[in-house]
Image 1 (cartoon, rainbow, N blue to C red):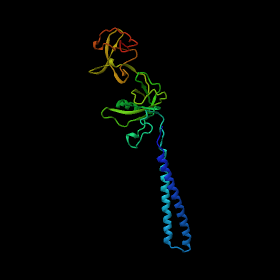
Image 2: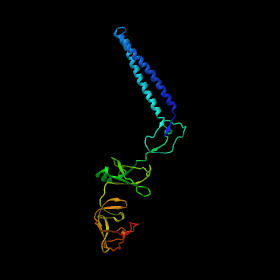
Image 3: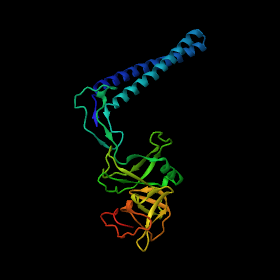
Image 4: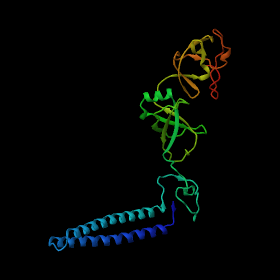
Length: 287
């Protein structure tokens, strides 16, 4: 992606290699000297102190040799940093520094560009405590996440959860989650807002528009239209919301017709004219 001026680092590497060569020569001489004095010590031609001094000098040169080798490796490493490669596959933003700019490490000028990983892409969202409890009661590994794009269309690929939070936000009562999606066509962009829906299973259920569910002294109820067109309230037990609809856990049976319009005018025993909802406006009419 970028190349930093190599000349200063090449010079530093050459100096480190020269120092290494000099130290190696000194280490070899100290090794030979210690070996020669060892034979003289065996013949009692020198004192023990002279031999000990040569052995100590040999050990010191060995330590200097290790230090010189480390400096060479450090210089080679610094030289390799002059070529800036992308650590991950992704898309870069605009170049923040032009050719010839002075870049200083640890300052604002050290930022050259931004690299964004787009495939796969992560989507962060949150669930309420009750929703998260349902997710935990199911198998999280089999949960599928579906996205709705800003234009209202559904994203063609399903994602999977790769992170679930371990704490509840005390202010919002939510738990953070993260899902991973394949994004080969770059339909999803970093920073984009989408709607996430977590699917943990499927079951048959009755759903009615949220506006059809009323709240009374004895709890929630809906208005049922009988065969004669007369309405009567019926208590129901509700579940979670699904889009604009409300899941009814109990209280309804197959074939029941639920009033969903002009509910404020309804009274027990009142007669209505049922009609099917229009295709373009599902919230009108009677079900």
